[in-house]
Image (cartoon, rainbow, N blue to C red; front, side, top):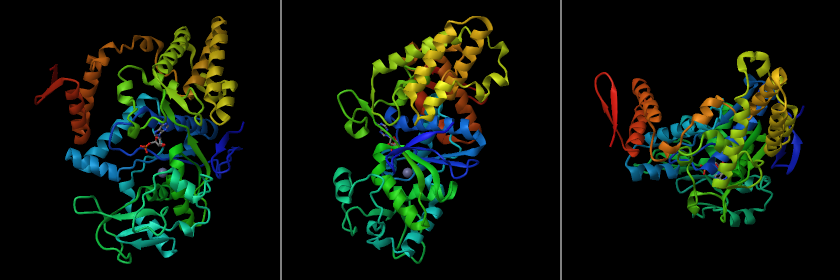
Length: 471
Ligand code: AMP
Ligand code: ZN
């Protein structure tokens, strides 16, 4: 069986052929960590987690290298740190951990690698230095800019001419730019901004920091290689972010950055456009998780094929919950005492489910196949029924569903947590805080204390234990 993916670069669905099936390389632009993610931010995370699972299924877990970066240096982060009067790394560590926790709640597998921009400053400097040497970048008023006139294919991914691209996106006009679409590779830092020394041969003085686009190109080169199999992200990243990544990497290394580019469509709110902070129509995952199991959010996010727009709302969540309930009701009839390795083997995945997923992640098709499997299994008896349920379970689990014991699924009670944290959640957080303190991860332990405080829970540490009470 082959996987077909829609490549933004060629605007066609094409058979996926990794350069090396023993080392499939896949990169997704990850979160900028300075605040809580909204559910739209999780659409690429969930969709491309599903692709990661499908690739692992085909090529074997150890043969797929999936990197999703953490952007931990960026002007918005610096501003947040100044407003809150907190060190930058306290903010980035706190929100990176929240992102990981929320990802786990949505059954998103940890990627193979999670490179952080601040761990790659020397690689970013090397990349920029190469671009300067090749004449693709220039210094001006303390900045280093990429000169888009040096790259003939600029705009190929978006299939737009430069004037249209500038008109359609927010491209900063600045006096130090030769061309409005030239973008910043490196910028100067003031004393109260984070900054790194630059090489002597650069025509600038003082400390500076990288631009966002350069981070991804340098992290891909270091962690995955010069040319990768798949690069993915949200549709809004096509221009300027991905166009700029391509320009930098191709000019620096004389090779394409990625063979296949994937872009997810937007999650929208009824009556408005894209869910986004600037439009003020966001719903935070942290608030949704107080009312719904993470698996329900995952089902809702996968209910449309990833390239299509998806309208978010309570109806979608309620429908998703209802559908999962029907599966869990059948799963509760499964006698898992006969489950063995063979039952969970990949040969047990339903052909309709994997066939749909192979077709550019056709999740509505795969979900329809799960429903059909459920109906078939429900009509069977004895061993046959058990076998059919095992196939249903393995096929759903490939998509990141059915990870609860049915009894637990139906026991979940969100009535208390809607008005704050319930006792179990509080105990779990206190225990996690104890572990974080023991590991000297004070950012995390402080974050848990703050979260408990926000929920009206007072904790008191003694020499031997921690007690808690409601305010
Ligand atoms: P950001 O932190 O804004 O860079 O966004 C992280 C990821 O979420 C990027 O890949 C964005 O393209 C994606 N994204 C942001 N808003 C939405 C949305 N409403 N629907 C789908 N994807 C989104
Ligand atoms: Zn990127």
